[in-house]
Length: 122
Ligand SMILES: Nc1ncnc2c1ncn2[C@@H]1O[C@H](COP(=O)(O)OP(=O)(O)OP(=O)(O)O)[C@@H](O)[C@H]1O
Ligand SMILES: [Mg+2]
Image (cartoon, rainbow, N blue to C red):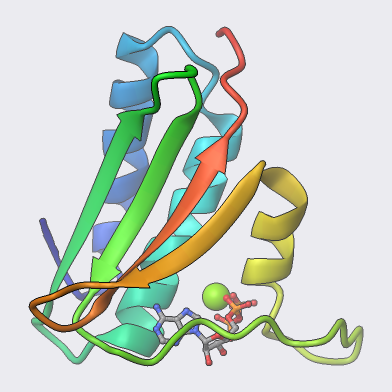
């Protein structure tokens, strides 16, 4: 679990690097994706000090999943491509990089946004 502040993103990237390293998987995509998901969880789904949970796990078929939990019920919204905008690219980037992604509500309130990655040997 991390606290919702910008300094937490390095911690999240390092956690994913170590975890994918233990799985002997390449971590480039995973670090990018979890940065976007955790940044969104902090920026759009939290107030200062709220808990954000980051998890990484394998599916039975070998796919690697990374996800970020936040306390907000508001869903992520993919914005239409807008080349003039300075934000709104994170989810478009994730869509291009992952097998699939999605969101689900948590029974205790809040939600998870997850992304399923192709397992690429390191
Ligand atoms: N965890 C979240 N909780 C609530 N709303 C979210 C969450 N993640 C994304 N959103 C909503 O979806 C929109 C699109 O997210 P996206 O990551 O694509 O863009 P951004 O975060 O606004 O900008 P960028 O990622 O380019 O810095 C956000 O502007 C926000 O309204
Ligand atoms: Mg974003």
